[in-house]
Structure formats: C-alpha cells, structure tokens
Amino acid sequence: MNILIVDDEPLARMRLKSMLNHLNFEHVLEAKHGAEGVLMASKHLPDLVFMDIEMPELNGIEAATEIKLQHPSMPIIFSTAHDEFALKAFDLSAADYLLKPLSLERLKQAIEKVGLTCVDDKIRVKRGNDVLMVSASEIICLMAEDKYVCAHLRDQSLLLDQSLAEIEKAHSVFFRIHRNALINTAYLRGIHNTADKPPKALLDHTEIQPTISRRQLSAVKKMLNEI
Image 1: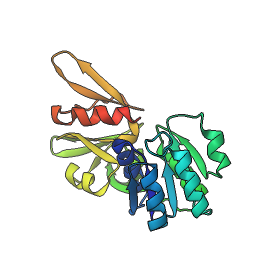
Image 2: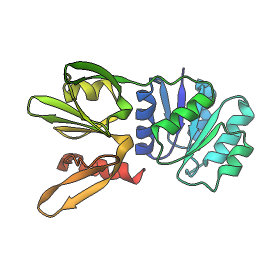
Image 3: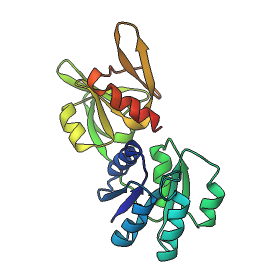
C-alpha cells in the first residue's frame, strides 16, 4: 500500500510522513511540488494522496485536477494551513480537507474515511508492579533520568525498559531534541527562551519543558514554522 505526500515544504513532509509511519503506513512517497506529484501519481498509483495547496510550478488544486482527470477514483486529501480553498477542493471530490497543524486523531479520521485502516503503535511501560501497553500517540515526551527512561503522558508519568535510542529507532513520531529527551512532534507548541539558560520545548498538555540542545535548536525552529 502506497501513500503519496505532495508538499513543497520538507519539514511538512517529514512531519506528515512521521505521523503516517506512526500509524504503520510504511510505504510513503514524497513529491516536492504539484508537477512532480502528478507524475508520481501516474507512475506509482498510490492508494491515497495528501496534497498541499500553495506550491510553486503547479499548485495543489491544479495538480489534483490533473490527477483526477487521469485517475478519477484516486482519493485525495488536501492538507493546508488555509481554509479558503475548501470549496474548490470539494468541487474536485476531495476525500477530506485537513487544516495544519494536523492532529493525529484528525489524520486517523481522514484516512479511515477513505477506507484505509490505521494501526496505532504501542509502547510497553511500567506502573508499579504492572506492565502496560500504551499508544505512542499518548506519550508527549520521553526523558532519560538517571538509569531510567520516563514517558510523560497528559495525566501521569511511566517508566520504560527501553533506551531513548531504541524508542527513537522504532517509533518515528518521536524527535530527539537533546541527548536526554525525545518529544512527540504532534505536541510541539513553541520554544521558551531564558537569558543564560538553554532553550526549552513548550509542549501541549504538560508543564514539563525538555531542554533543546544547541545542535537541534534550528531543526525545532523550522519544525515550528511548519505548524
């Protein structure tokens, strides 16, 4: 099963691809602009296309029009930061219209709407004497503390047996912002700067603010620009 992302912003493609991988869609193709998207749609015949709208060379509406002329049944979901194109999108029989920033839950709804099945990743955690499986999408951030890795959720913090490196490799929804911290990119809200102290990541649904390393600061800033 192939999914095609058409977006001229590399970080936007990276974030959406990460969310799709998190839902166990492994075969994700990428096109950098509308014209390339039209070519790749004909070459690979994807099961679903995610289409940005404002792009150079050929915008998303124009690209989707060409794809629909050639492949009328190919489902297209528009993903954009602007809502003024919604009517034009649905005139093209768009499967759905998503506004950035995308939430994982809204993305799942759109995918299931076209008949594809989402499978959420699970991570094993400890709570007292109990071993539980929780969805990776519920984990806001993970931090290495002493000899342990702690997963922070909305209402609780749980211990893991795995290292940050193992989690980062197995679950692409997480992004390393520091040698001791991974964040779930779906929860990234901003950056907190304080004089003479390292910047911190502001995350939705928690007061925890993981430190951002100097090496990763520019990547986090770019990621915020795509939200």
